Length: 255
Image (cartoon, rainbow, N blue to C red):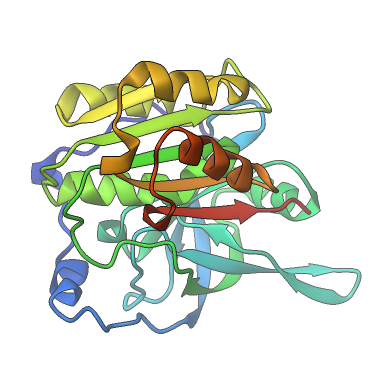
């Protein structure tokens, strides 16, 4: 296992030509395919969450920011799949990053894979994505490893030179004082003047939003968290003035 310093890539270092090209043809849906991922690194982000970088054996693998893959597991002679959102930008393909919280046997299996270990997976899947450059400011709200699909979107927007404001409100119920990618977000906020990072605690998200001064009626909002928390957070932003037809959410579950 490795522990590494995270920093946002410079704009000169990245590009997403395949996705940029696809933007001109918005009906494109990248086909799901079977792949084998080889672990390049496994980095502790918090005591319970790891970032796992995989090199896929399919150079033609592509996805929209916010999409997911289904790793395949074997247990007691049976095969299981569980969805994991991709935390990296599409510009990194055929390399992808997963943000995995150790909450059950499948996540423990992934976290315990050694560098050089492999896992079969299929993807991409998922609908809470960006398939074009947005034309409005964006607010992201994440708890725990729910940061993964939102990070994919934020990284991609940064690479595209997105010219609207972007806010990230982040909490982590498992380790409230230790947030995944926290140093990364603080560094990004120094490089990208339109990005504002708002770390908080799960019980203080409403207060953080009020204090931020964001006009919630004027932004598009994506929320990702565990279980019924996205529904609760939708209620919070709705009561603060968000238009619910501009709010999307995604839940994840542990096993």
